[in-house]
Length: 92
Image (cartoon, rainbow, N blue to C red; front, side):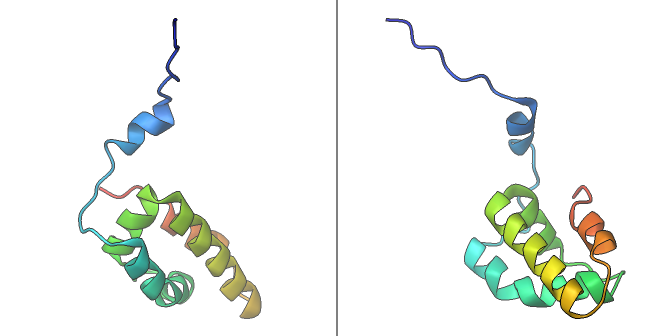
């Protein structure tokens, strides 16, 4: 019996090298998400390293935050593009 294991993609392998500190749980991320979305849209220099680290490694929270940024931007007549770019900048 020969079971072939799925191949490790470059994207999946990259997850092993992601920064994990400062650590933030999904629950903590959701608690801070509204504030962080507003800051991304209205304060270009504002940063929350823990949020960016968490979102870089958590697709569920990233998707939720992206949707929230787009919603808040639309409700306030703001452009979400710059905020979304900042959100996806590499975290070193």
